Length: 180
Image (tube, rainbow, N blue to C red; front, side, top):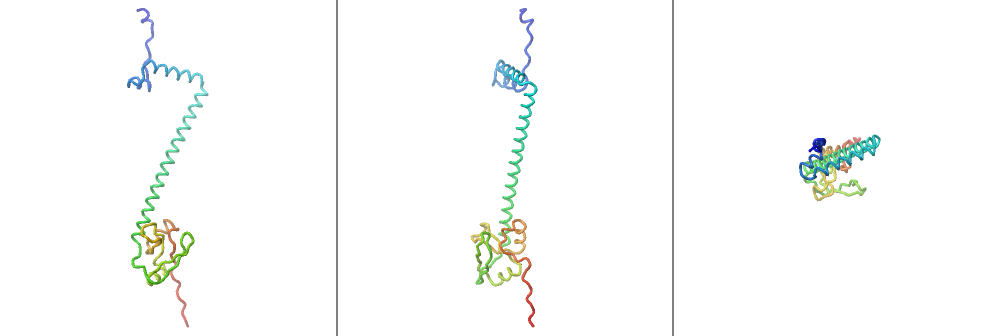
């Protein structure tokens, strides 16, 4: 019994080791060995080594946080792009001119440099020349590659993406000279 009297009481485990022992995932002896190993490793590294390890850990945490922030920004950009594309398609659906087919060919320059044409009604062709209508890419809203839009829709698409607008006579048709 004298042996037990002189023996110091064991320190209570704290932190992760205590939680693992309490959960039954680790026995107390193994937890104490792990703590002892950590202390020995820290002592072997010294203050400079510990400071360097802490700096590396902080740098890795900062890099991880930056990567997460960049991923969040990329998700937000993708969401905004999808919303923008849907808004563009909605404008095309809502502002598309009706009854445009006719006997007049109206030529314009496509994005890839080709010069396609649309068969248009006389009034629609004059509306294009006057700047009241415009030709834009359809983006799959309709079967045709290009559609005729009202000026409000053309203006909206021009502010969103000018490359979508293939023809728009903003200035309108110049006045005809008076003949003497």
